[in-house]
Amino acid sequence: MNDRLQRLRREAALEEGEGLFILRPTNLRYLSGFTGADSYGLITGKEAFFITDSRYTEQASRECPDFDVVRWRDPFPPLGATISDLAGKTGLRSIGFEPAFVCYSLYREIAEALGDVAFVPAEKGVETLRYVKDDREAASIRKAAEIADRAFAALLPRIVPGAAERDLARDLAYEMERLGADGKAFDVIVASGPNGSMPHAVPSRRRLEKGDLITFDFGALCDGYRSDMTRTVVLGRATKKQKERYQLVLEAQQAGISAIRPGRLGKDVDQAAREVIVSAGLGDAFSHGLGHGVGLDIHEEPFMNSRCERRLEKGCVVTVEPGIYLKGWGGIRIEDSLLVEDEGVELLTKTPKELLELL
Ligand code: ZN
Ligand code: ZN
Image (cartoon, rainbow, N blue to C red; front, side, top):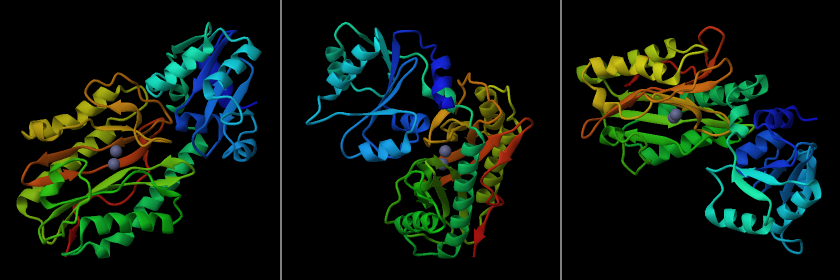
């Protein structure tokens, strides 16, 4: 029996007559191994049903050996009726759902079809299990991180005056696939010159100019798992101010990384990095949390910001990504993905962090 299903039943404290409806694609993939789309899971104390339509029934039978594949959609009954039928057959009195992912219209359809069977927000779900990565998951993220490092090295000669942000973003994504990634972990960010003051700038047609700071934020996708890293480089010789501010962000990043160990609260790690930037008088310019978990999703628990009460554990994979953003001047961010170890961390993204002056 699939160990993850058993752990879910334990974590969610599924009692006799209770089921869990799974919608979030990454949760379904985590439990079942399914790599397709538009499918649902229904987990009971003893059974696991994989609900999908004719586009995916063959794939699901192959990829999800621990699940009974159930077909819905014409000529079979609609989704609500399918779930209600399974609830009747297995004697469910209540089904929990992922409150952050079930939209209102789907909620209404299923709740109405279920009639007397309760359809209620689940308190604990698959995310609880995903918090700590096992060795295989860590290996996939490690591979994604390594590919991103190599892709960035391949891109460096193309970061020249006149190159457009969009073209560099596309080239970086292409390099990652060429090096064996299944795709990109998220839309590549390339933010040059004044655009760098927007933490999640969308790559534009702007062409690079001598003297620009350029921020690249990107990651690779391998076996469903993602890596995430950011490097800021300067085109030409860095000015004194660029160097000073870069060193500040780097110092904050190193302080954040050094603060990571099992048992630490996310907010304490955030604080360790943030106080470096605050004490230099640039606290307002560091306008987001320090980092986040990364895995099947690009942003997942723990969200390490000043309010984060989650404790890090061995096997968590998180990013550390302080930045400063100054309107009209630009921005600097440095980000790594790392695996929490018994003592300290394993750095997964390894591209050097000394300020790179591209001459
Ligand atoms: Zn990133
Ligand atoms: Zn990130």
